[in-house]
Length: 466
Image (tube, rainbow, N blue to C red; front, side):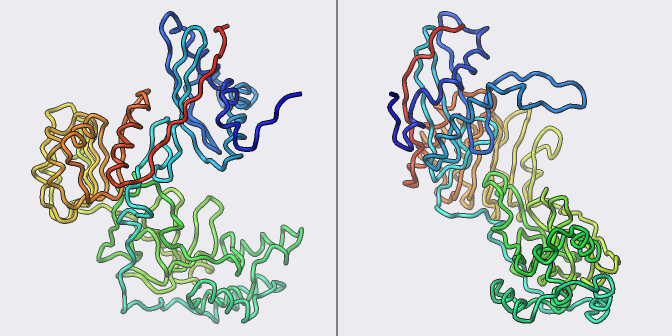
């Protein structure tokens, strides 16, 4: 009779990982010989990154699960073990001898480290617990002069909706008051009118999908129920630290919508069916109107698009699109590379917030032109683009820093890692061995006394290569 392992132990059982390791070894069979081979990867609850070959499907057809069934089965075995211990993501590295003897290292997780993207390297290191990038901390500016648009007409809106939805079940005043109490904001009159006509609860329609379609057609969106209204604050637009830190909040003087990530005045009441959300905007931009209708794109993390000056305009199909042009001169986010801005000096100005130095085939750059800039909070530099990484120590306002392993090594050895940082990232490309990256990450984490990336070593034998 087989011995059953206690719950949570299988993730540390070499047998759990054997199928994945065998597939990775087989993928490197052409390199197998007298020397050991190294493999690495990452497995998450909802996806994985493994260097495995896949068959090319016929034109016009996606890869089918059954075509990579061995890979799916091997990964699901690990995912089941992860679920047992409540782990969302695990990276690993293994050294496999020609005899099959294998040393497997499980890397992490750590509550201070975001998972990597597409590779087993650690993602952003969160040096200050619960810290947020600057754009996610920004609130909309007060606009005391803002008023509803002249087109806002609750009586016309109600007549129109009742003509379109004569049999709809509306929300009671108590249900509307309950929504306001839950949200902590008073609903604008147009939105109250909408829900007085229909509360948009699925149970009211039962199996009558035509009834739901009539509601969505009448309101021109997939309407949320009165119980599902929510505030699109910054926390509702999740973005990884290394991406969010490279964004900037920009609201032009002539903008109808403020360019913030989220707002306590953005009340989401529906969607467009494509993943984007519609909201009533109670915190408009300098040229906007209180109660205007905006769209929050699922493809963007900052700002919103004006759809209509009022809910009345929206329902009556009188749209007012604002041209979205977030470019600023000079830009708050500067990209220095061979195809964009050609020098750090050209990028430098007092308002600069983000400096990203990308692929460059010329002489490395000095950071002297941006030293002392009061708002520079993010620096990301591609490997080999910095003439002297120690110049980073002069950038006293940095909250996020992304560097190559070699540049991080220079800062660590000199004791020059900026203490102003809230988060950091080690940028390594290709199949770079994750173990040295993890070692550097742990050194950085230790400077802030943050939880380390723990290595769990498992040993076993995969048997001879078939």
